[in-house]
Length: 228
Ligand SMILES: C[S@@+](CC[C@H](N)C(=O)[O-])C[C@H]1O[C@@H](n2cnc3c(N)ncnc32)[C@H](O)[C@@H]1O
Image 1 (cartoon, protein in one colour):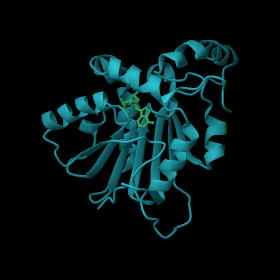
Image 2: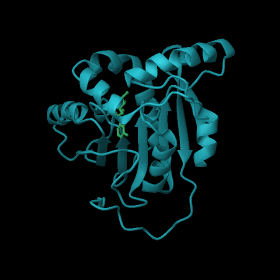
Image 3: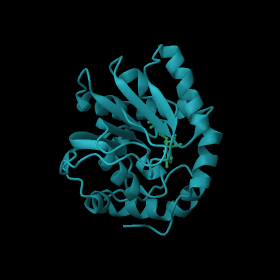
Image 4: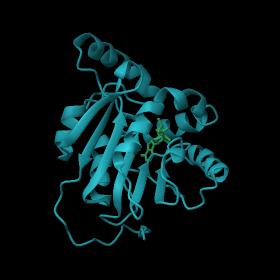
């Protein structure tokens, strides 16, 4: 499942620091249908705890119901600076943001009812580790929603994405040849539904219920955060 081309944390941080001033111009409109559908599917209740992984500049923020327990994390301080500006514009001071690595989150087990990751899973050095962390911090039967581009199953498109992978991966922006099925199998996520979204139906929205045993909460990692 792992391709030869891996993103490095250094190149990701550099890339997103560079694109942060123009990110919204490129990613707002094009990726909006996936965001809207994902947040609608979450079915957020009044007291639900929500984690937005790799929240970036916070383009999802206006779509959530207001006054919810919402936490956003991202590895890029520059992207989060934009998200802070958006929080001010939206008058949404109840949203909490933290610079945090999604591969090693500082939250207690079962801290969230919903975990959303839009356009992030192919932007991390180790997608398996991120999904394992998402499963850990999401409560049993909680909702996990991923929106992302995955390697096409069409033989020609898949081949083109494979050929482009070395070049694009080196930019630190994303990895075009991440395969969906082996990834889900490796982390034991069974989708309730998969939709195709966005331009040319080129992205997939995956909704899963977090099927794990209820375990006693472990202490959060050093410096970790209790939600609620
Ligand atoms: C394509 S952007 C998506 C941002 C946002 N989710 C959206 O829908 O617009 C990918 C984001 O993932 C963040 N990211 C990459 N690696 C990360 C990691 N290990 N932990 C947390 N965030 C990460 C990047 O900094 C960037 O903000």
